[in-house]
Amino acid sequence: MNRSQHLGHRMARTVVLLGLLSALAEAAHAAPINPAMAGTWSLAAADVIHPDGSQARDYGQAPKGMLVIDPQGRYSLQIFKAERPRFASPDKGAATPDEYRSAVMGSSTHFGTLSVDPAGQTLVFHIDGASFPNWEGQEQKRSFELKGDELIYRVVPRPNGDVPVSVWRRMN
Image (cartoon, rainbow, N blue to C red; front, side):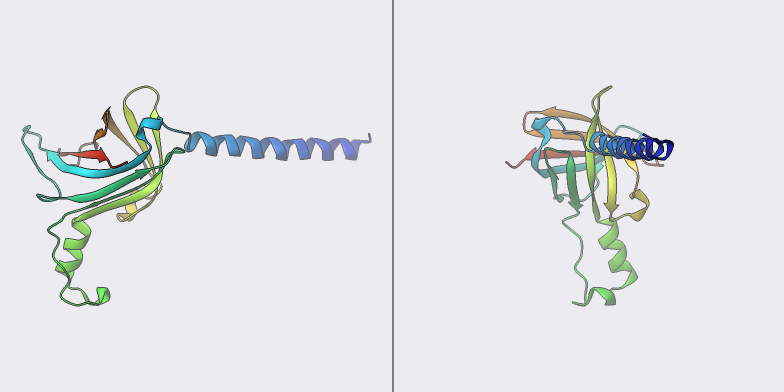
């Protein structure tokens, strides 16, 4: 084998190795999760715990939502305040600023991949897309408990100290 062939062979191996490393990194990012977490979950509660320890409804009295997690850890999550007012116009583009505000503040949606931090009971949401664009590309960690058909997680405290808590019940 001449020098040129040897260098070409080394480059080809390097490209293959880089491809394998990239595939492994992607697999680790979307590694299979605990099979007990996979499935479809219905929102049972979307509350907030205030710094003084009191608790309140974060998305109204009867929030609606769904969390779908596949066995590879891909997820889609939607939470909606049931009391969101309808827009006066059937044209979404003709809404008032107050209507837009109510729609945005009355919902939280995002999707991406989910993993469990092996160091503890922490879910890690790797957010690809979100109704709040600032979350896109972020990793968000949430402490959680999985008790049979109930999944409860706490979001990191908001700037005002409130801690959102979501309670999900398995649908399937």
